[in-house]
Image (cartoon, rainbow, N blue to C red; front, side, top):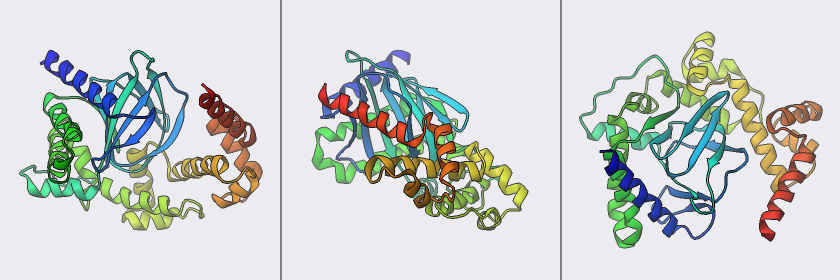
Length: 305
């Protein structure tokens, strides 16, 4: 069994490397499937992880959800069942043995569709489940991933077969050790599903003042129950969640649109530029101007290599 898993990991790594035509990140011809490659370990990157399955075919990565650390490599897979602000970095990669991984995004609707089309019986739980987990890869799941990726060699088969193989991958996840946790995000009435509704409300209005009572009403929970369930799902409070969204968007704006920190602070919802600067430095390690200069210099150095 171990050798079979290892052989499939090697094949998957070769497929990813062969189809990648650029370093870093690439969207494939298969809907919602992405390939990632890095030839060296990386610094910390801040992202919003959408509901997805991530599998590392080669190398290792660590991510943080708030203060919770997760490490995974070729023996593991990572799943996020909701939109979450994440900090992560590649910790094992080299030019000879690059980091190679794939990401398959999915929706709550797709999860629910698999549950409805199969005999998997999972009832909504009042108790909320963490929206991120790392599981040990199984041969059946790895085979399903390989079938999906192999479609890149027969593009004409992608429109018909990729939805089938994607459903199989979700089926394997739902049948696995963390299947209940994944299912709860899509089952109306569960604690996780109700927190998901509040998360979507924050995502769409992160630049506006946070009304916890309105979020609790959206989740159909008391204030105390909402706080408890939200932290269980996201490992942070609603205010901390909003702050991470604001600061990630501020960094993106500073890099791509404006170098005026006060203007960007206002755009992402801060009323005080000094508070913005303090919180930005606490999260990214440098005040805005220094951080953006450092990132641009690092990018320019890569371009000249």
